[in-house]
Length: 194
Ligand code: IMP
Image 1 (cartoon, rainbow, N blue to C red):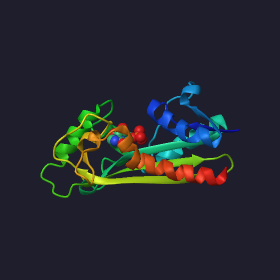
Image 2: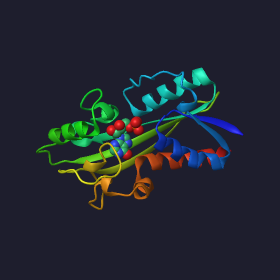
Image 3: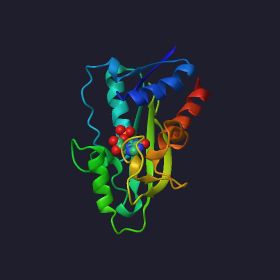
Image 4: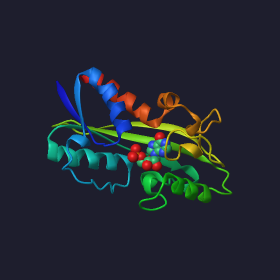
């Protein structure tokens, strides 16, 4: 039985990964099982760098295979911002609403509203080079907030059918999301190698 550690304490991500990895014969651990690991500073300049920082820090301590991911929103007219700063766009300890308000303000009067959500997953198996799996969801920054589902920038992110991400059910979002696309690639790779 192979063991793998997911670099998260987020319940939603944990459930999602367990659901996919346990049928492949993995025993899945999360950071909840390793409470002594302190905060990992994600100070990389790319999603890849941050995912790797998390994976490597954990592997050095735990000596197990690790999966770590990093996600964010990139807005074309803002030169890719908020990017790796998506969680703290409006500052430290801010709410999703604070970030959304700042983004809407920074986008006021801008016609090019193209944007994309990105997820990069880093798989760091012991003794192997890191492997990266990327998922992208293209869309537009809306001019108003809509919907109550999801989290983060979902209420102001418009997909190709005109709906805001926060108007989709979790199942609908999981069928198209950047995270789901990156995860599908990871699973395909693990299926081939197990
Ligand atoms: P994380 O790396 O998955 O923790 O994501 C970092 C930040 O990107 C989050 O705090 C959100 O602000 C934003 N983000 C990532 N994925 C999504 C999403 O699916 N919807 C809305 N915002 C997201």
